[in-house]
Length: 252
Image 1 (cartoon, one colour):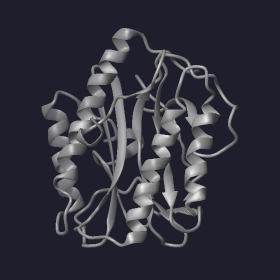
Image 2 (image 1 turned 90 degrees about the horizontal axis):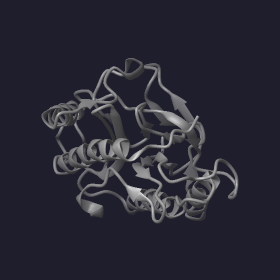
Image 3 (image 1 turned 135 degrees about the vertical axis):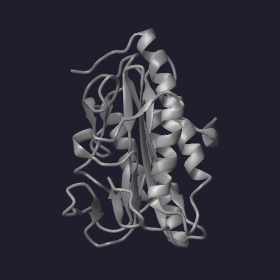
């Protein structure tokens, strides 16, 4: 069942989203060759707790860390460890914060030092696909209008959509209805209504759309070992234009 949030719930989700945005800003300033994934995780957890929230992911289904940190061919759900980032890699960081009974959830992919033009374009197209989908997140449209707009951008750029993992509703639960595919025909699916809160998150592969889950039970990688990028925000459907709840400095 899709939950429609009231004004009180929306205010709490805005605060949860703000915390996620602040964590994004912090980590973006730390990502460089030589920093370890566990250090990024530690910094994220410290800031989330300092701001009065708790990590949404830590302990969720047994996930052991605060953030997901996925490098190069890792699509999502990478578990932070002592691995140090290297020049030319890309890293996808997914952050969730739980504040006053509500979650915020957002992800970005960042360059580690100087990266190839191909990787830079992959990041650019992944972000662009999100924003094209976001434009369609208006009351009166259908969920499929978001999905189709994302897919159109990705396929026209010659990249591939991950199909096994999708976006989701979000609120008092980290994952709520509806599931939000990043592909499919327009004009289908639930009608979008004011008060809906959605986590829209395209996951885009440079090569094949095929993926594999590693033996740790979490880390998702591309089958051909080519890079993947991830971009996500928690958004609110309103009477007029949609609102990003997890925005950081880059889109203020």
